[in-house]
Length: 144
Image (cartoon, rainbow, N blue to C red; front, side, top):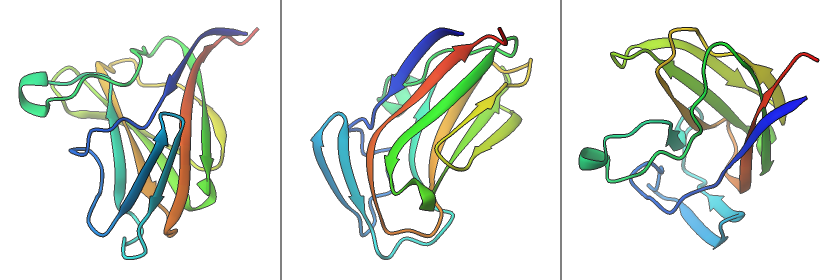
């Protein structure tokens, strides 16, 4: 049973996007083409945050607030996702890493550590040079 659902779109902030040698075409908020034939595997292409320092980063949080008590389901709506990896990095209230979840494939269930205060989601190059990003969905679910 789904309790809540959030869509995360590619935002136009270039500060958290790997742009060196990249060609990014934003058709609309649900259709972004990314091409970069020179990018090495393992490079963080894009990042989203659940908490930000607007004074320093000049961006707003793009991720929903989640907690360690619930179970979540993530769905990647990305053409070419076979060559992309999504990493969720959970942080405690001091900004220290509290855990990591790696999403390989189109979807999976996950739980975050109990001491999670905020988190970031990273889209990582798994060896490809082109993909088409639509959105990522995070759903809060129950075991029922």
